[in-house]
Image 1 (spheres, one colour):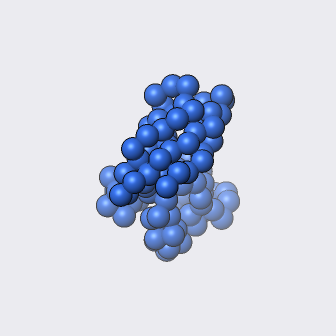
Image 2: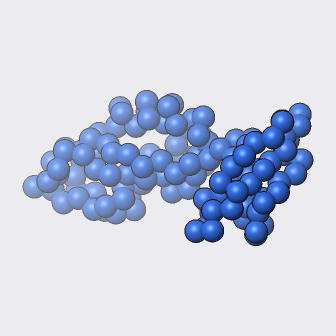
Length: 120
């Protein structure tokens, strides 16, 4: 099976063609650098994404706090991650970078505040 992709690792946006057999990428063409090959291999087998969203916060100047994963998590775990995140409420003050959920869904990746929020 062939899969057509556009690499998003740099501004060049190489058009990639990945050949997949038995659940493995056996070749990648069209990449101008090694990052394109690595991107195609991951994207075809188990896509990964950074998750950005918000959690509820009490006692802050806003009702929600922006959060982000500290690294990519599997795309197929996003719905489960969001289900868990919707149950979370933090209390102000919160500092940017403060871990909100450690080891999100046993991925080894933390969910952290992406901004500080003072208490009112």
